[in-house]
Length: 432
Image (cartoon, rainbow, N blue to C red):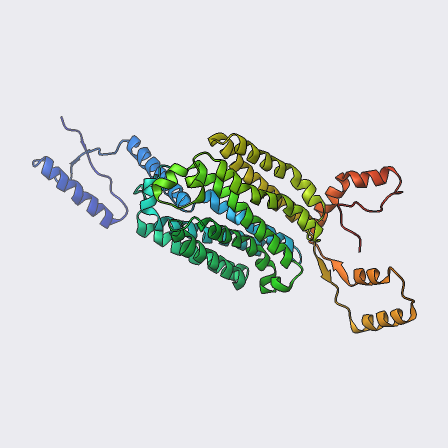
């Protein structure tokens, strides 16, 4: 016997009328002899498992899409690019940290780098498909269409440039745009033409080190006391990229040959030539922290702190030179990363710059009068030169210097002997 029940009435007559007509129509089709006001109880619900699986499928699809864009952006490399842009801002910052500028610098650099990497992969779809290490990238694997990648590159690049221009200044956006142009327009097509593409890529990869300086000072960086620091960082990262990418190219030389690329290490079957090419760059890089301190760009604590990462990188090169192989080459490659990260952090902590003190008219007249009345002594020119400049440092860096000064053995030695020796640590800053 069919169980039937009367549909409940709703407050809205239109709603009841619609439900009633739908129910009667279903009843007439299934049971022609059933009364109009009686409808069978029909239960038609989807199993709850299907709804759960549908939600999981949507979450998985969204996660997969984010992973594809991460690969398209070369996420790890993009993070490194953003990190290299920060020291310049932290060094040249004239006052306290501005969260808006700092966030704009970081996010704008990430977006513009992601755009450059996406455009690079658009140019190399066919070559990436030949190589084992790149065949599963979104474009050669077919997981993403070239149109989607192009739209992402345009959106991320334009957004990043707008953020840098409005959040920092147009000069910073201009350097970011130059980075994209040199990376995509010169370096990328040159990779299959000449092995000197690595040198062009090194210049393009070092331009982000200037972003932080321009974000803090704009175009005035060229005539500021921090111009030498910007040149030092740019040179460090340019030279560092040569042995870094030589090691990477030798590790994956068969893949690069399969892709049709032109690089010096690809013709090196034993690894000895790659080690030999890398050594001159390491010699210069080992001396750069000492050069920075000798030129007054940083405290002598910079080369002292850089001794350990420099020694580890040098030792990994010697191991690769004497026992060339995948293991020693990979160790050489990884130690290059620790060397760069350590030097960026140490230079940010120990860099210094003397800012000229602006004297008023009364100060100038007083100095001239004192110079006329006071006999010239041997140490007077030095004192005058010291009084004409002052050190200007952000508070965060001053606190770091103080912390390291407390840990410095020279300062402790002076304290233990009641200040009988030199009044200040030879690795610290001379008082002004």
